[in-house]
Image 1 (cartoon, rainbow, N blue to C red):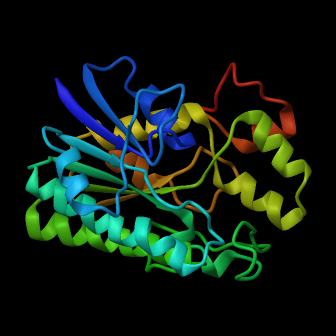
Image 2 (image 1 turned 120 degrees about the vertical axis):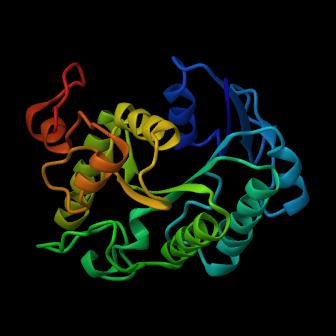
Length: 268
């Protein structure tokens, strides 16, 4: 049986990560910044190195989602969880002989060239440039800078310590109803971003499962975490090839055709 730890387990991505392993022979250990009434989680402050080392004892895989997720946050609000915390979890992974770390990076690590302006990180200019996993980092906010740091730390630990590392550049996890509501309230640039970056709950589960369990051909692996959106500009080909990820949902189908989720878009 594989032992999998999830930090940030009470967040939206964390909850889908839990569901991703519901049919697998996996022992989950859940950590969150504070206690969640509906989840059996252990409080963990990732900026506390000693606590993180102790927490990861006996684990095989870490899915590291804990962070300040606000793309508009100031540096002082980000540096503890998103910088010190990332170093701590990688050190703890090595000390505890973990096999793999799946790091929740973000589209904000590479999206400055496509935003309407730096003060509108959740927007997309008219004709965005296609971004591939191997392209240079291009953070659009301080939050994006911390995710570039996290990816670089993963690369260091993969190459220096032989750790399996997957850097997941997660898009925007929303239910179908949330996607419709967001797009109804946004201007054209905001709606364009949502259509491109949407990650459905079911595709999120497929993505997390693939990132945690697929045998990697190379480490670190950088993967884009979005659904099969017709208007995407984060390339999915590499993620599908490297991780065997097969997204089934498309924002355009939800917004234009009233897709209710009972059937998905199959991609190859």
